[in-house]
Image (cartoon, rainbow over all chains, first blue to last red; front, top):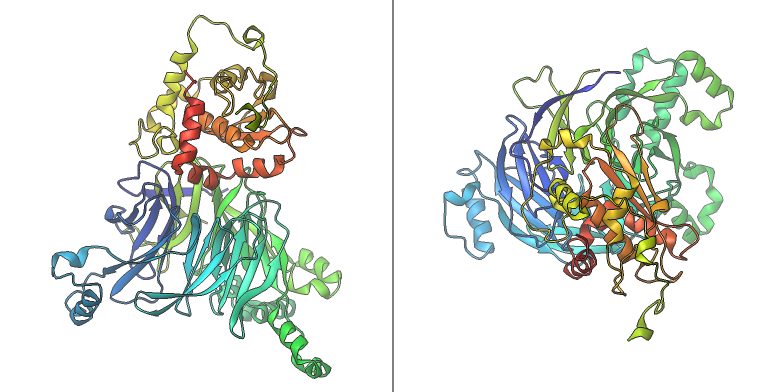
Length: 423
Length: 194
């Protein structure tokens, strides 16, 4: 079994538990949420700490998320055990002079930060989002709309819309979960949100006419759902170019493109599961339904998601994080047992695939592929638990190929480690 | 006052009947050694305090065996939040209900300690707090290679599943240890530990 090799540990490490690290949308840096109430920004080029965000939260920072598509200025959201979320801004290198007019404008709005020059390198606290009753566990920006989702031990998911810079309005408070909401993740190309909970369930949310509501309930996990993540819209191409596929495989690819990105979840029950949307019947097949518009509308809103498959069982303790590579479709997982495991989806070999098809056409959309473990490492953070793991672009001098990725793990030992996967 | 308690008249065990190794070295001294190894980030005494020691120095000590009696000694002296009595003398923790589970695979260095606690009454509303006290005590006193699994003994509490899930949730435990009033309750319980 290939192993992951340690490329570097971010320096200096935190002397308390670190919860999560997330790569910047276009700069070679990561933000690490720490239980010492700070966020540390580390370089992925030399793995040194570049800056620190502190002073905004009264308790542990549990989670942080970069605003996508920001240019010239980086925007980070932080979620804390103090029940609030913070929005922080920082001018990006090289944008200072060019962005001067915008900066003056923003400073003016912020109530006059007259000092120029020195502050350009600093993180500026922009706004605080209050509303949750208890600890914020996770937060996420939509990649396609000016929306931020936050979730909390108070069992709710909040959706905030950024109307203009730093003016966030609550557009939904979703309260159908029966326990802490541990994680939220946006669909990559639709305005749809997934959430995982202490109630062992996953829910999907989207806007129905004017109101956000739950459009799917995914049951099956037998423990807290610690993390959910959608795959990239184009992940299907990780299985190979269309020329090399046989007819069955091509049909499978068509089905998957029709159903759209799948969702992956990991849980206290030690399993990692893949969920897929069940494609709806084409509208023209149900002309009679048009006579009952209210029912029709409801049917159009609700979605059916089913468990597609499970990843091979590789963990002996709860799994706290999974990350689905947008570049390669590979998955990495980590958790309480201190292992980091990398998986890959492959076409089943001919005989297996035929057997599955022999069962009938119903399960055709599943079963043609299989997940295999392609690399793993044990005791990745000494004897400590790993709270988070994520793919990030490789940016150090040792980078071997374009679009090479590294794995970044974040642990109870306060360490952020960067790993190279050789497969 | 007494009537407000969930269990005003608990059964109390005779101290001489409690399990002990009866060695000459005082327990307090051994506990001190472990406290130096505790992950500082979960310290209930002061969650904001700087860390005491890095784990990188303990590789030699790591091999030291820890047995059930030692775990019992660490938690039996915790005070009940309702009574001026120890969890050992109330029979909330017993030697028989402590298990040390070795690493799941030869490559893993992670062991588990499982403690089953017996609430003094089946409806004890303080069960979660007692469980939290036991959990925090062990997280602080045992080397970090131990995963601490504190559960309610089956059939002793109506709310066992709920309490077990809470105690098993590291995020909830971490957040609880940043809650000043809960920290004070736990610190009072642990004040009687040597």
